[in-house]
Amino acid sequence: MKIKVVYDNKVGVPGLVEDWGFACLIESGSERILFDTGAEGEILIDNMRRMNIPPTSIERIVISHDDWDHAGGLSAILDVCDAPQVHVLPSFDRDLLDTAKRSGQLAPVDAPGWLTDKIWSTGPLPRINPVTETGDEQALAIKGRHGFLLLTGCAHPGLINLVQHCRKELGSAPRMIMGGLHLKDLSNEEVTGVIAELRGMGVARIAPCHCTGAEAMRQLGSAYCTNYVESAVGEIIEWP
Ligand SMILES: [Fe+2]
Ligand SMILES: [Fe+2]
Image (cartoon, rainbow, N blue to C red; front, side, top):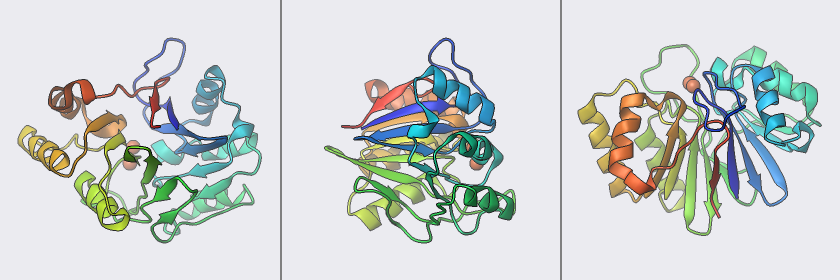
């Protein structure tokens, strides 16, 4: 299994474009699943082309939550895809649901469950400290030989809540976490507490990006050391 970062506010490979938002491509066997779509379809599609990812090869699209920096590229990518299944949450904004319907294969996620034999959705989880009227978010757990990798868009429901939810539903906490972790509004002491909880639950590797926050990323980097994995546009994370 490979996870390729195609949209992030940081670039890891020269020639690719950075922009605020998040999207990555999960390659599971012959199946390709796009998780989130960034803010701008043009940037998403351009980065994918430069990384040799034909949009027509995408069989599924999962939208984590309906913030513009995760769902903004959906309309443009659907224009160049070949009718993928689109996994949205029923509570998403009406316009976004209408856009998703254009694929002809709307697949709403209303409860935790497996989307494929290796990819599981947390189902809708409410946002904590809501700053907008929108709320629910889903994250994915990807099954590998060594356990689960938790892939988050923004982790608005709270990173610890997400990990605990996975542990409860799947029977084991993720071994690795990747994506936007939304720790940017936490104090250093609070981030230290989050890291201790993650470690206590068995999270052994971490690849934070997007809305994690620069200071939180620095703290995670020094805590996780060689188990801190760089995640930026062009980076490929292996989860065998
Ligand atoms: Fe975000
Ligand atoms: Fe967000």
